[in-house]
Image 1 (cartoon, rainbow, N blue to C red):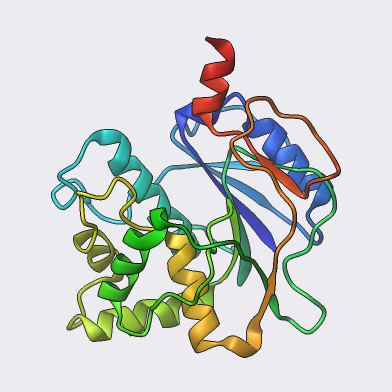
Image 2 (cartoon, one colour; image 1 turned 30 degrees about the horizontal axis):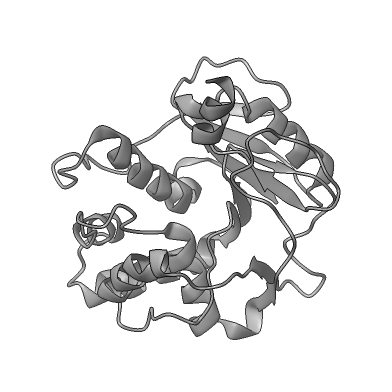
Length: 242
């Protein structure tokens, strides 16, 4: 199982710690690919690849540049298997500001996938509206699947793409994804919520739900084995420095 980590300029100061923690704690991790805004970045124990655009998204996303980048990064995670030669069929996506703290696996011996769950909050409503517009079968399952990492399978992604594209008269998945973002919501779409919901509804026999202990929005990274991973968003690192 390969690991894919999209990297923007805000997370350069933590990316090596993220890589090191993936190598140390993720069971069966093979290649680690960094999809970087700067392809000449020097990092250890990984392969750095240039950030790619699925297509020209700017003409669809009439929003500020930072939010545009956020949605494009979501598509990078979903389309990584189409752009990285020899990427394993199963690949783990990890947010660059996420640090693992103890051993963890994402596929069991029977080939079933672990998906982290959490409570539904009002902030997620826009995500549910978005994915339901992409396909009516993608409805809220009662679970929050957005937790800074997720295991993907390229064959299931291809199936998801076909499902959405067939429903929208063969319009490309990426375009349906972008055109259905409602910009009056600050958080208009979630790739993690879409994919995990698809798997839960269409392939329930391949899904294992879990609720591991982790901590998000930490101000300072502290490797604490009480948690399986911690998330150190750049905004909170900025607060520490100022």
